[in-house]
Amino acid sequence: MSTRDTLLAKIQAQYDEDSESPPVVTLDEYFIGNTDEDSIAPNQVGYGRPALAELYTRFREIQEKPSVQAVLVGIHGDWTEALRYTDVWPAAENVHIYTTASAREVEAWVEGLAADGVIMGWPYGAHPSVPTPRPGYKILTVCWD
Image (cartoon, rainbow, N blue to C red; front, top):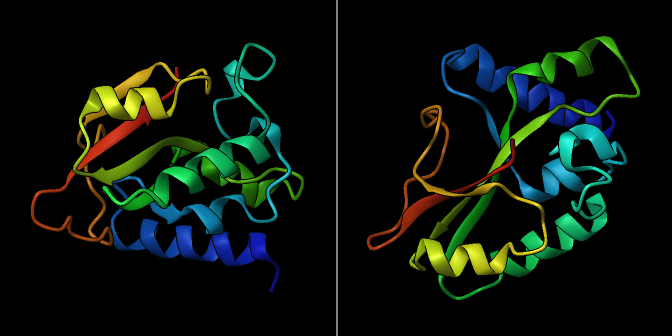
């Protein structure tokens, strides 16, 4: 099974579990093997959003910070396009950061990624499969569009 097929199977399983809350996957699951530049923040491609490889590098650096528990990619409702077209990667909506850092700190971390901002919590609800934040940690979501 390819990396893309494994990702699609995980997303489908989460969708089958709860179709109301968007699926989430790890950075590695989302970015390894992904060459579809339009898969995340497509409206910012060519308008300030760096290449996928740079996004992946930056979010991995964030994930390594001592004040970060996890970084997860939130899947967009249009992910099903990837089921119909083999050259399309499942679409991502946002990136969730479990952290003790402030929103202002996280905004500084994502500067240069053409993000529209950082908000508190899950904008479309937390999927039941997401890990529970450790005591003192909160979810901050990086949004585009």
